[in-house]
Image 1 (cartoon, rainbow, N blue to C red):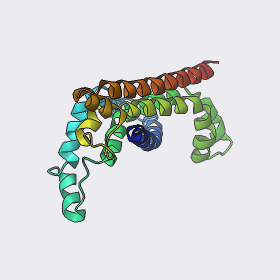
Image 2 (image 1 turned 90 degrees about the horizontal axis):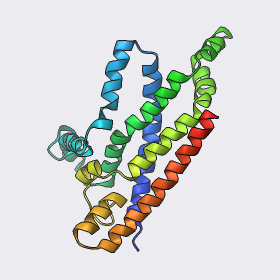
Image 3 (image 1 turned 30 degrees about the horizontal axis):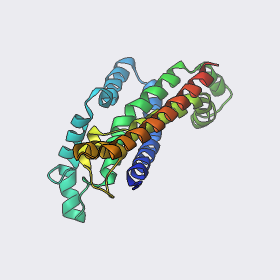
Image 4 (image 1 turned 90 degrees about the vertical axis):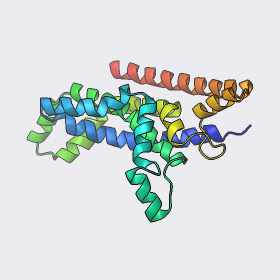
Length: 219
């Protein structure tokens, strides 16, 4: 059995989750204290990938990073490097698709946080950096973990955007989801069902983890 699709999926999901984790925290922290009208506009913009079809997201990425896109054409001309049809392109796609999950989870936790703790720390002369890293984030730890786990699971199962920007190339770009589609199309049902089973096991494990974190938050 060739385990490359699983290893590649884990690699893509892990890298994109790390990026999404920090981007989500940064965006949530900045937008939480913004004026209401500005917050609403940015919230809509940043959450848009959550409701857009993944294929539409993949299309926009191709228009930007493809060989004929502005960024892709420059990469080809300057470095002779094609961005799309590589596993790295899937990292970009998965980061965009999963960002709203992390952002919304973290922002909800920041909105629910008791700001009096921040104000009390400020009266004691504590800096904003100290309050953010040592007070706010530790109190929102379970939400951060839940957001990261959800983002990882979503990235692991992403198909639409990754299939458009990376396709299915055995041993190079194949993921669990694209392997399911490929093996089903070529009539290798056993292999397709195998990867479906792998995805189900991982998804169930992730959901159990998220439920445990939710119970800890509500306890």
